[in-house]
Image (cartoon, rainbow, N blue to C red; front, side):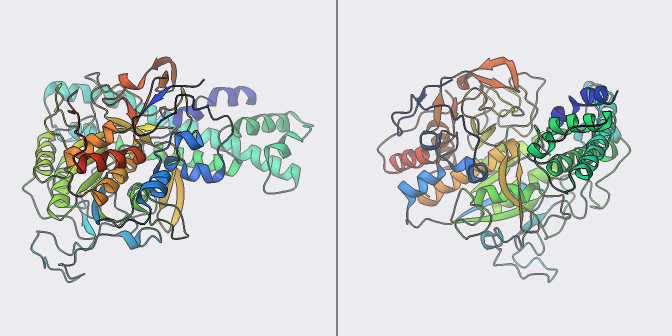
Length: 549
Protein backbone atom coordinates (compact mmCIF):
# COMPACT_ATOMS: atom_id res chain seq x y z
CA UNK A 1 0.00 0.00 0.00
CA UNK A 2 1.17 3.49 -0.83
CA UNK A 3 1.37 4.89 2.70
CA UNK A 4 3.26 7.72 4.30
CA UNK A 5 4.37 8.04 7.88
CA UNK A 6 6.15 11.03 9.37
CA UNK A 7 8.69 8.83 11.10
CA UNK A 8 11.72 11.03 10.56
CA UNK A 9 10.34 13.90 12.60
CA UNK A 10 10.29 11.79 15.76
CA UNK A 11 13.32 9.65 15.02
CA UNK A 12 15.43 12.78 14.71
CA UNK A 13 14.41 13.64 18.25
CA UNK A 14 15.64 10.45 19.85
CA UNK A 15 19.23 11.57 20.33
CA UNK A 16 18.32 14.91 21.85
CA UNK A 17 15.74 13.40 24.16
CA UNK A 18 18.14 10.86 25.56
CA UNK A 19 20.96 13.39 25.79
CA UNK A 20 18.66 15.42 27.99
CA UNK A 21 18.01 12.29 29.92
CA UNK A 22 21.76 11.97 30.30
CA UNK A 23 7.97 35.28 -0.61
CA UNK A 24 5.25 35.94 -3.15
CA UNK A 25 4.99 34.14 -6.51
CA UNK A 26 3.52 34.69 -9.97
CA UNK A 27 0.68 32.47 -11.18
CA UNK A 28 -0.77 32.17 -14.63
CA UNK A 29 -4.15 30.67 -15.51
CA UNK A 30 -6.45 31.62 -18.38
CA UNK A 31 -9.85 31.47 -16.62
CA UNK A 32 -8.58 33.24 -13.48
CA UNK A 33 -7.05 36.72 -13.72
CA UNK A 34 -5.07 39.06 -11.45
CA UNK A 35 -3.30 36.45 -9.34
CA UNK A 36 0.28 37.58 -9.84
CA UNK A 37 0.41 39.21 -6.45
CA UNK A 38 -1.27 36.65 -4.20
CA UNK A 39 0.28 37.25 -0.76
CA UNK A 40 1.82 34.54 1.37
CA UNK A 41 -0.46 33.43 4.18
CA UNK A 42 1.24 34.26 7.44
CA UNK A 43 -1.53 33.40 9.93
CA UNK A 44 -2.12 29.85 11.13
CA UNK A 45 -5.01 28.05 9.46
CA UNK A 46 -8.22 28.15 11.48
CA UNK A 47 -9.86 24.86 12.47
CA UNK A 48 -12.40 25.31 9.68
CA UNK A 49 -9.64 25.99 7.14
CA UNK A 50 -7.65 22.94 8.28
CA UNK A 51 -10.66 20.70 7.70
CA UNK A 52 -11.49 22.16 4.29
CA UNK A 53 -8.28 23.64 2.91
CA UNK A 54 -8.26 21.45 -0.17
CA UNK A 55 -11.55 23.06 -1.28
CA UNK A 56 -10.43 26.66 -0.77
CA UNK A 57 -9.31 29.21 -3.34
CA UNK A 58 -5.78 30.56 -3.75
CA UNK A 59 -6.83 34.15 -4.50
CA UNK A 60 -9.51 34.47 -1.85
CA UNK A 61 -7.93 32.39 0.92
CA UNK A 62 -4.19 32.42 -0.01
CA UNK A 63 -4.30 28.64 0.45
CA UNK A 64 -3.44 26.37 -2.52
CA UNK A 65 -6.73 24.48 -2.60
CA UNK A 66 -8.64 23.41 -5.72
CA UNK A 67 -11.29 26.20 -5.67
CA UNK A 68 -14.01 23.58 -5.13
CA UNK A 69 -16.23 25.85 -3.04
CA UNK A 70 -15.86 28.59 -5.65
CA UNK A 71 -16.85 26.14 -8.39
CA UNK A 72 -20.05 25.24 -6.56
CA UNK A 73 -20.88 28.86 -5.68
CA UNK A 74 -20.21 30.40 -9.08
CA UNK A 75 -20.58 27.64 -11.69
CA UNK A 76 -22.53 24.61 -10.47
CA UNK A 77 -25.03 26.39 -8.23
CA UNK A 78 -28.31 24.41 -8.53
CA UNK A 79 -27.51 22.64 -11.78
CA UNK A 80 -28.47 18.98 -11.90
CA UNK A 81 -25.83 16.58 -13.12
CA UNK A 82 -25.56 12.99 -14.21
CA UNK A 83 -24.62 10.33 -11.64
CA UNK A 84 -21.03 9.13 -12.01
CA UNK A 85 -19.79 5.80 -10.60
CA UNK A 86 -16.32 6.05 -9.05
CA UNK A 87 -14.60 2.82 -8.01
CA UNK A 88 -12.36 3.03 -4.96
CA UNK A 89 -9.83 0.24 -5.49
CA UNK A 90 -8.39 0.16 -2.00
CA UNK A 91 -8.56 -1.49 1.42
CA UNK A 92 -12.34 -1.73 1.60
CA UNK A 93 -14.44 0.90 3.35
CA UNK A 94 -16.99 1.43 6.09
CA UNK A 95 -20.23 0.80 4.19
CA UNK A 96 -22.29 2.09 7.13
CA UNK A 97 -20.48 5.40 7.61
CA UNK A 98 -22.90 8.28 8.19
CA UNK A 99 -21.27 10.37 5.46
CA UNK A 100 -20.85 7.55 2.90
CA UNK A 101 -23.79 5.14 3.13
CA UNK A 102 -25.93 7.52 1.08
CA UNK A 103 -23.46 7.56 -1.83
CA UNK A 104 -22.75 3.84 -2.25
CA UNK A 105 -23.04 2.14 -5.61
CA UNK A 106 -25.56 -0.68 -5.46
CA UNK A 107 -25.71 -3.60 -7.86
CA UNK A 108 -29.47 -3.74 -8.37
CA UNK A 109 -29.23 -6.96 -10.39
CA UNK A 110 -27.79 -8.91 -7.45
CA UNK A 111 -29.91 -10.33 -4.60
CA UNK A 112 -28.13 -9.79 -1.26
CA UNK A 113 -26.70 -12.71 0.69
CA UNK A 114 -28.26 -15.57 -1.26
CA UNK A 115 -24.92 -17.13 -2.21
CA UNK A 116 -25.66 -16.85 -5.93
CA UNK A 117 -24.28 -14.89 -8.84
CA UNK A 118 -27.68 -13.47 -9.81
CA UNK A 119 -26.45 -11.11 -12.51
CA UNK A 120 -23.97 -13.56 -14.02
CA UNK A 121 -20.99 -11.22 -13.77
CA UNK A 122 -18.82 -13.88 -12.16
CA UNK A 123 -19.05 -12.49 -8.62
CA UNK A 124 -21.39 -13.70 -5.89
CA UNK A 125 -23.35 -11.25 -3.70
CA UNK A 126 -21.44 -8.20 -4.95
CA UNK A 127 -23.96 -5.63 -3.77
CA UNK A 128 -21.63 -2.65 -3.22
CA UNK A 129 -18.50 -3.98 -4.91
CA UNK A 130 -16.18 -6.93 -4.33
CA UNK A 131 -13.55 -8.14 -1.87
CA UNK A 132 -10.55 -9.75 -3.60
CA UNK A 133 -8.72 -10.21 -0.28
CA UNK A 134 -11.25 -12.48 1.41
CA UNK A 135 -10.37 -12.72 5.08
CA UNK A 136 -6.73 -11.69 4.66
CA UNK A 137 -5.39 -8.38 6.00
CA UNK A 138 -1.64 -8.23 6.77
CA UNK A 139 0.75 -8.82 3.88
CA UNK A 140 4.40 -8.78 2.90
CA UNK A 141 5.88 -6.20 0.59
CA UNK A 142 6.15 -7.52 -2.94
CA UNK A 143 9.92 -7.84 -2.97
CA UNK A 144 9.80 -9.89 0.26
CA UNK A 145 7.21 -12.21 -1.34
CA UNK A 146 9.53 -12.53 -4.33
CA UNK A 147 12.30 -13.77 -2.04
CA UNK A 148 9.99 -16.14 -0.17
CA UNK A 149 8.60 -17.66 -3.38
CA UNK A 150 11.76 -17.35 -5.52
CA UNK A 151 9.94 -15.15 -8.07
CA UNK A 152 11.65 -12.87 -10.59
CA UNK A 153 15.03 -13.08 -12.26
CA UNK A 154 18.35 -13.33 -10.45
CA UNK A 155 19.11 -9.60 -10.64
CA UNK A 156 15.68 -8.66 -9.20
CA UNK A 157 16.07 -11.11 -6.35
CA UNK A 158 19.58 -9.82 -5.62
CA UNK A 159 18.18 -6.29 -5.46
CA UNK A 160 15.38 -7.50 -3.21
CA UNK A 161 17.82 -9.23 -0.86
CA UNK A 162 19.93 -6.09 -0.48
CA UNK A 163 16.81 -4.07 0.22
CA UNK A 164 15.50 -6.50 2.83
CA UNK A 165 18.88 -6.71 4.55
CA UNK A 166 18.75 -2.92 4.88
CA UNK A 167 15.09 -2.32 5.70
CA UNK A 168 14.30 -5.10 8.17
CA UNK A 169 16.88 -4.10 10.81
CA UNK A 170 15.89 -0.45 10.29
CA UNK A 171 12.25 -1.31 11.04
CA UNK A 172 13.23 -3.16 14.22
CA UNK A 173 15.45 -0.29 15.34
CA UNK A 174 12.79 2.34 14.57
CA UNK A 175 10.21 0.35 16.52
CA UNK A 176 12.50 0.26 19.54
CA UNK A 177 13.25 3.99 19.29
CA UNK A 178 9.57 4.88 19.05
CA UNK A 179 8.81 2.71 22.08
CA UNK A 180 11.57 4.46 24.01
CA UNK A 181 10.42 7.94 22.99
CA UNK A 182 6.83 7.02 23.89
CA UNK A 183 7.88 5.94 27.38
CA UNK A 184 9.91 9.13 27.93
CA UNK A 185 7.02 11.37 26.82
CA UNK A 186 4.44 9.36 28.75
CA UNK A 187 6.52 9.53 31.93
CA UNK A 188 7.07 13.26 31.54
CA UNK A 189 3.37 13.78 30.89
CA UNK A 190 2.38 11.92 34.08
CA UNK A 191 4.86 13.95 36.14
CA UNK A 192 3.61 17.28 34.74
CA UNK A 193 -0.07 16.37 35.19
CA UNK A 194 0.66 15.56 38.83
CA UNK A 195 2.55 18.83 39.29
CA UNK A 196 -0.23 20.91 37.70
CA UNK A 197 -3.02 18.95 39.37
CA UNK A 198 -5.01 18.47 36.15
CA UNK A 199 -5.36 15.91 33.36
CA UNK A 200 -5.23 18.36 30.46
CA UNK A 201 -2.83 21.25 30.10
CA UNK A 202 -1.61 23.74 27.50
CA UNK A 203 1.89 24.74 26.50
CA UNK A 204 1.35 27.92 28.53
CA UNK A 205 0.54 25.79 31.58
CA UNK A 206 3.67 23.75 30.98
CA UNK A 207 5.92 26.79 30.74
CA UNK A 208 4.47 28.19 33.97
CA UNK A 209 6.15 25.39 35.93
CA UNK A 210 9.27 26.34 37.85
CA UNK A 211 11.18 23.02 38.03
CA UNK A 212 12.52 22.15 41.46
CA UNK A 213 14.22 18.91 40.37
CA UNK A 214 16.36 17.81 37.46
CA UNK A 215 13.67 15.27 36.51
CA UNK A 216 11.00 17.97 36.31
CA UNK A 217 13.34 20.22 34.35
CA UNK A 218 13.92 17.41 31.84
CA UNK A 219 10.18 16.63 31.65
CA UNK A 220 9.29 20.23 30.87
CA UNK A 221 12.02 20.37 28.21
CA UNK A 222 10.85 17.14 26.56
CA UNK A 223 7.19 18.15 26.51
CA UNK A 224 7.98 21.64 25.26
CA UNK A 225 9.71 20.01 22.32
CA UNK A 226 6.71 17.70 21.80
CA UNK A 227 4.36 20.66 21.45
CA UNK A 228 6.08 21.41 18.14
CA UNK A 229 4.66 18.12 16.81
CA UNK A 230 1.08 18.45 17.98
CA UNK A 231 -1.43 20.75 19.62
CA UNK A 232 -1.56 18.60 22.75
CA UNK A 233 0.50 15.88 24.41
CA UNK A 234 -2.29 13.25 24.04
CA UNK A 235 -2.19 13.97 20.30
CA UNK A 236 1.58 13.45 20.24
CA UNK A 237 1.30 10.22 22.25
CA UNK A 238 -1.32 8.96 19.80
CA UNK A 239 0.99 9.65 16.87
CA UNK A 240 3.83 7.89 18.63
CA UNK A 241 1.55 4.87 19.17
CA UNK A 242 0.73 4.92 15.46
CA UNK A 243 4.45 4.89 14.75
CA UNK A 244 4.95 1.88 17.02
CA UNK A 245 2.14 0.06 15.20
CA UNK A 246 3.58 1.01 11.80
CA UNK A 247 7.05 -0.33 12.55
CA UNK A 248 5.68 -3.39 14.37
CA UNK A 249 3.67 -4.27 11.27
CA UNK A 250 6.79 -3.82 9.16
CA UNK A 251 8.82 -6.15 11.36
CA UNK A 252 6.12 -8.78 11.88
CA UNK A 253 4.43 -8.83 8.46
CA UNK A 254 5.61 -6.49 5.68
CA UNK A 255 9.32 -7.34 5.97
CA UNK A 256 9.01 -10.80 7.56
CA UNK A 257 10.27 -13.25 4.92
CA UNK A 258 8.54 -16.19 6.62
CA UNK A 259 5.05 -14.65 6.78
CA UNK A 260 2.32 -15.78 4.37
CA UNK A 261 -0.64 -13.41 4.48
CA UNK A 262 -2.42 -14.92 1.47
CA UNK A 263 -3.18 -18.27 3.09
CA UNK A 264 -6.74 -17.35 4.22
CA UNK A 265 -7.71 -16.46 0.62
CA UNK A 266 -6.95 -19.91 -0.76
CA UNK A 267 -5.98 -18.99 -4.32
CA UNK A 268 -2.66 -18.88 -6.14
CA UNK A 269 -2.07 -15.12 -6.36
CA UNK A 270 0.44 -15.61 -9.18
CA UNK A 271 -2.06 -17.48 -11.37
CA UNK A 272 -4.60 -15.06 -12.82
CA UNK A 273 -6.76 -17.96 -14.07
CA UNK A 274 -7.25 -19.25 -10.51
CA UNK A 275 -10.72 -17.77 -9.98
CA UNK A 276 -13.16 -17.23 -8.38
CA UNK A 277 -11.84 -16.23 -4.96
CA UNK A 278 -12.67 -13.60 -2.33
CA UNK A 279 -16.24 -12.61 -1.46
CA UNK A 280 -18.90 -10.00 -2.04
CA UNK A 281 -18.29 -7.97 1.13
CA UNK A 282 -15.92 -5.03 0.36
CA UNK A 283 -16.08 -3.65 3.91
CA UNK A 284 -12.95 -2.96 5.91
CA UNK A 285 -12.18 -5.90 8.21
CA UNK A 286 -10.83 -3.97 11.21
CA UNK A 287 -10.96 -0.35 12.35
CA UNK A 288 -7.28 0.21 11.55
CA UNK A 289 -8.05 -0.70 7.92
CA UNK A 290 -9.15 2.89 7.35
CA UNK A 291 -7.39 3.90 4.15
CA UNK A 292 -10.24 3.18 1.74
CA UNK A 293 -12.79 4.92 3.95
CA UNK A 294 -10.65 8.06 4.10
CA UNK A 295 -10.14 8.03 0.32
CA UNK A 296 -13.86 7.56 -0.39
CA UNK A 297 -14.80 10.53 1.78
CA UNK A 298 -12.43 12.84 -0.07
CA UNK A 299 -14.15 11.96 -3.33
CA UNK A 300 -17.79 11.89 -2.35
CA UNK A 301 -18.73 12.27 1.33
CA UNK A 302 -22.26 13.67 1.23
CA UNK A 303 -22.13 17.41 0.78
CA UNK A 304 -23.91 19.83 3.11
CA UNK A 305 -25.69 17.14 5.14
CA UNK A 306 -24.77 18.71 8.47
CA UNK A 307 -22.28 16.01 9.50
CA UNK A 308 -18.59 15.41 9.00
CA UNK A 309 -17.13 16.95 5.88
CA UNK A 310 -17.87 17.53 2.22
CA UNK A 311 -16.53 15.39 -0.57
CA UNK A 312 -15.32 17.10 -3.73
CA UNK A 313 -18.14 15.74 -5.92
CA UNK A 314 -21.85 15.31 -5.65
CA UNK A 315 -23.82 13.03 -8.00
CA UNK A 316 -21.36 10.23 -7.26
CA UNK A 317 -21.87 6.58 -6.39
CA UNK A 318 -18.86 4.91 -4.75
CA UNK A 319 -18.07 1.31 -5.73
CA UNK A 320 -15.89 -0.31 -3.06
CA UNK A 321 -13.31 -2.84 -4.27
CA UNK A 322 -11.17 -4.34 -1.50
CA UNK A 323 -7.83 -5.27 -3.05
CA UNK A 324 -5.13 -3.42 -1.05
CA UNK A 325 -3.91 -5.15 2.14
CA UNK A 326 -1.72 -3.91 4.98
CA UNK A 327 1.34 -4.42 2.81
CA UNK A 328 1.82 -4.56 -0.94
CA UNK A 329 -1.11 -5.31 -3.21
CA UNK A 330 -0.98 -8.29 -5.59
CA UNK A 331 -0.90 -7.60 -9.33
CA UNK A 332 -3.64 -10.20 -9.80
CA UNK A 333 -6.05 -8.41 -7.45
CA UNK A 334 -5.39 -5.01 -9.02
CA UNK A 335 -5.81 -6.32 -12.57
CA UNK A 336 -9.06 -8.11 -11.75
CA UNK A 337 -10.24 -5.18 -9.62
CA UNK A 338 -9.80 -2.76 -12.52
CA UNK A 339 -11.68 -5.12 -14.84
CA UNK A 340 -14.46 -5.55 -12.26
CA UNK A 341 -14.89 -1.78 -11.98
CA UNK A 342 -14.96 -1.32 -15.74
CA UNK A 343 -17.40 -4.16 -16.36
CA UNK A 344 -19.79 -2.99 -13.66
CA UNK A 345 -20.17 0.61 -14.75
CA UNK A 346 -17.42 2.70 -13.17
CA UNK A 347 -16.36 5.76 -15.17
CA UNK A 348 -13.43 6.58 -12.84
CA UNK A 349 -11.19 4.26 -10.82
CA UNK A 350 -9.22 5.73 -7.91
CA UNK A 351 -5.95 3.88 -7.25
CA UNK A 352 -4.32 5.22 -4.08
CA UNK A 353 -1.62 2.59 -3.83
CA UNK A 354 1.73 1.71 -5.32
CA UNK A 355 4.85 -0.43 -5.01
CA UNK A 356 8.37 -0.61 -6.41
CA UNK A 357 8.31 -4.24 -7.59
CA UNK A 358 5.63 -5.72 -9.85
CA UNK A 359 6.44 -9.27 -11.07
CA UNK A 360 3.16 -9.56 -13.00
CA UNK A 361 2.96 -5.95 -14.17
CA UNK A 362 1.73 -7.09 -17.58
CA UNK A 363 -1.57 -8.21 -16.03
CA UNK A 364 -2.13 -4.70 -14.70
CA UNK A 365 -1.00 -3.06 -17.95
CA UNK A 366 -3.52 -5.19 -19.85
CA UNK A 367 -6.25 -4.16 -17.41
CA UNK A 368 -5.34 -0.48 -17.85
CA UNK A 369 -5.54 -0.94 -21.63
CA UNK A 370 -8.93 -2.59 -21.15
CA UNK A 371 -10.12 0.40 -19.10
CA UNK A 372 -8.88 2.71 -21.86
CA UNK A 373 -10.81 0.73 -24.47
CA UNK A 374 -13.96 1.21 -22.38
CA UNK A 375 -13.31 4.94 -21.82
CA UNK A 376 -12.63 4.69 -18.07
CA UNK A 377 -10.29 7.15 -16.32
CA UNK A 378 -7.76 5.84 -13.79
CA UNK A 379 -6.40 8.23 -11.13
CA UNK A 380 -3.19 7.02 -9.48
CA UNK A 381 -1.17 8.28 -6.50
CA UNK A 382 2.44 9.21 -7.30
CA UNK A 383 3.87 7.66 -4.12
CA UNK A 384 5.21 8.84 -0.79
CA UNK A 385 8.98 8.37 -0.87
CA UNK A 386 9.99 11.93 -1.78
CA UNK A 387 11.67 10.57 -4.91
CA UNK A 388 12.14 11.70 -8.49
CA UNK A 389 10.31 9.11 -10.58
CA UNK A 390 12.40 10.00 -13.62
CA UNK A 391 15.28 8.13 -12.00
CA UNK A 392 15.01 4.52 -13.27
CA UNK A 393 15.64 3.03 -9.83
CA UNK A 394 12.64 4.91 -8.37
CA UNK A 395 9.92 2.73 -9.83
CA UNK A 396 6.26 3.17 -8.95
CA UNK A 397 3.71 0.61 -10.14
CA UNK A 398 1.24 0.72 -11.75
CA UNK A 399 2.14 3.35 -14.35
CA UNK A 400 1.18 4.26 -17.89
CA UNK A 401 4.61 4.04 -19.50
CA UNK A 402 5.79 0.45 -18.86
CA UNK A 403 9.08 1.97 -17.63
CA UNK A 404 9.68 3.58 -21.02
CA UNK A 405 9.75 7.22 -22.12
CA UNK A 406 6.28 7.25 -23.66
CA UNK A 407 2.77 6.51 -22.41
CA UNK A 408 0.96 3.49 -23.83
CA UNK A 409 -2.51 4.80 -22.85
CA UNK A 410 -4.06 8.21 -22.27
CA UNK A 411 -6.55 7.34 -19.54
CA UNK A 412 -4.28 7.33 -16.46
CA UNK A 413 -3.40 10.48 -14.52
CA UNK A 414 -0.71 10.39 -11.81
CA UNK A 415 -1.01 12.81 -8.89
CA UNK A 416 1.54 14.33 -6.52
CA UNK A 417 0.62 15.98 -3.21
CA UNK A 418 0.47 19.61 -2.10
CA UNK A 419 0.58 20.98 1.42
CA UNK A 420 -1.55 23.90 2.61
CA UNK A 421 1.48 26.24 2.84
CA UNK A 422 1.34 28.53 -0.18
CA UNK A 423 4.88 29.37 -1.23
CA UNK A 424 8.13 27.45 -1.36
CA UNK A 425 6.79 24.61 0.82
CA UNK A 426 3.69 23.88 -1.29
CA UNK A 427 4.94 20.46 -2.35
CA UNK A 428 4.33 17.96 0.46
CA UNK A 429 7.68 16.72 1.74
CA UNK A 430 6.75 13.05 1.23
CA UNK A 431 5.45 13.41 -2.33
CA UNK A 432 7.15 11.76 -5.27
CA UNK A 433 7.59 13.96 -8.34
CA UNK A 434 8.71 13.70 -11.96
CA UNK A 435 8.70 15.84 -15.09
CA UNK A 436 7.11 13.08 -17.20
CA UNK A 437 5.81 10.54 -14.69
CA UNK A 438 3.75 12.83 -12.44
CA UNK A 439 0.98 14.69 -14.26
CA UNK A 440 -0.37 17.16 -11.70
CA UNK A 441 -0.31 18.13 -8.03
CA UNK A 442 -3.34 18.38 -5.71
CA UNK A 443 -4.03 18.79 -1.97
CA UNK A 444 -2.75 15.75 -0.08
CA UNK A 445 -1.15 16.79 3.20
CA UNK A 446 -3.20 16.72 6.42
CA UNK A 447 -6.55 16.09 4.74
CA UNK A 448 -9.64 15.73 6.94
CA UNK A 449 -11.92 12.90 5.87
CA UNK A 450 -14.04 9.94 6.87
CA UNK A 451 -12.80 7.06 9.05
CA UNK A 452 -14.44 3.79 10.14
CA UNK A 453 -17.26 3.92 12.70
CA UNK A 454 -18.55 7.28 11.43
CA UNK A 455 -15.45 9.08 12.64
CA UNK A 456 -13.15 11.62 10.94
CA UNK A 457 -9.41 12.23 11.00
CA UNK A 458 -6.56 14.02 9.25
CA UNK A 459 -4.34 11.87 7.05
CA UNK A 460 -1.66 12.75 4.54
CA UNK A 461 -0.21 11.18 1.42
CA UNK A 462 -0.46 11.17 -2.34
CA UNK A 463 -3.20 8.67 -1.47
CA UNK A 464 -5.25 11.73 -0.44
CA UNK A 465 -4.27 13.81 -3.48
CA UNK A 466 -5.44 11.19 -5.98
CA UNK A 467 -9.07 11.08 -4.74
CA UNK A 468 -9.16 14.89 -4.75
CA UNK A 469 -8.47 14.67 -8.49
CA UNK A 470 -10.89 11.76 -8.91
CA UNK A 471 -13.52 14.04 -7.36
CA UNK A 472 -12.75 16.82 -9.85
CA UNK A 473 -12.96 14.28 -12.69
CA UNK A 474 -16.35 13.16 -11.39
CA UNK A 475 -17.54 16.77 -11.31
CA UNK A 476 -16.51 17.22 -14.92
CA UNK A 477 -18.21 14.01 -16.10
CA UNK A 478 -21.35 14.75 -14.10
CA UNK A 479 -21.99 18.02 -15.94
CA UNK A 480 -20.25 17.17 -19.24
CA UNK A 481 -20.90 13.43 -19.74
CA UNK A 482 -20.06 13.62 -23.45
CA UNK A 483 -16.36 14.07 -22.66
CA UNK A 484 -14.01 11.09 -22.93
CA UNK A 485 -11.62 9.87 -20.24
CA UNK A 486 -8.70 11.20 -22.26
CA UNK A 487 -10.37 14.61 -22.56
CA UNK A 488 -11.07 14.74 -18.82
CA UNK A 489 -7.40 13.96 -18.12
CA UNK A 490 -6.33 16.72 -20.51
CA UNK A 491 -8.78 19.22 -19.02
CA UNK A 492 -7.51 18.58 -15.49
CA UNK A 493 -3.89 18.93 -16.59
CA UNK A 494 -4.36 22.02 -18.74
CA UNK A 495 -6.72 23.99 -16.49
CA UNK A 496 -4.61 24.01 -13.36
CA UNK A 497 -2.79 26.94 -11.79
CA UNK A 498 0.81 27.35 -12.86
CA UNK A 499 3.35 28.77 -10.41
CA UNK A 500 6.73 30.19 -11.35
CA UNK A 501 8.01 30.19 -7.81
CA UNK A 502 10.80 27.99 -6.54
CA UNK A 503 9.48 25.04 -4.50
CA UNK A 504 11.23 22.57 -2.25
CA UNK A 505 10.85 18.85 -2.95
CA UNK A 506 11.40 15.96 -0.53
CA UNK A 507 11.48 18.49 2.33
CA UNK A 508 15.08 19.27 1.37
CA UNK A 509 15.95 22.96 1.03
CA UNK A 510 18.85 22.06 -1.24
CA UNK A 511 16.35 20.56 -3.71
CA UNK A 512 14.69 23.75 -4.91
CA UNK A 513 13.03 23.56 -8.31
CA UNK A 514 9.92 24.71 -10.19
CA UNK A 515 6.61 23.00 -10.90
CA UNK A 516 7.35 22.62 -14.61
CA UNK A 517 10.32 20.42 -13.68
CA UNK A 518 8.44 18.14 -11.24
CA UNK A 519 5.27 17.38 -13.20
CA UNK A 520 4.20 17.03 -16.80
CA UNK A 521 1.62 19.83 -16.62
CA UNK A 522 3.57 22.04 -14.23
CA UNK A 523 0.26 22.81 -12.56
CA UNK A 524 -1.89 22.48 -9.47
CA UNK A 525 -5.40 21.09 -10.03
CA UNK A 526 -8.20 23.66 -9.96
CA UNK A 527 -11.85 22.56 -10.10
CA UNK A 528 -13.16 26.03 -11.00
CA UNK A 529 -10.87 26.33 -14.02
CA UNK A 530 -11.50 22.71 -15.01
CA UNK A 531 -15.25 23.24 -15.27
CA UNK A 532 -14.76 26.38 -17.36
CA UNK A 533 -12.47 24.53 -19.75
CA UNK A 534 -14.77 21.48 -19.81
CA UNK A 535 -17.67 23.73 -20.83
CA UNK A 536 -15.61 25.27 -23.63
CA UNK A 537 -14.47 21.87 -24.91
CA UNK A 538 -17.92 20.31 -24.65
CA UNK A 539 -19.46 23.20 -26.59
CA UNK A 540 -16.74 23.20 -29.25
CA UNK A 541 -15.42 26.64 -28.34
CA UNK A 542 -11.88 25.39 -27.69
CA UNK A 543 -9.66 22.45 -28.49
CA UNK A 544 -7.29 20.62 -26.18
CA UNK A 545 -3.53 20.39 -26.46
CA UNK A 546 -1.89 16.99 -26.76
CA UNK A 547 -0.86 15.42 -23.44
CA UNK A 548 2.33 14.21 -25.08
CA UNK A 549 3.83 17.72 -24.91
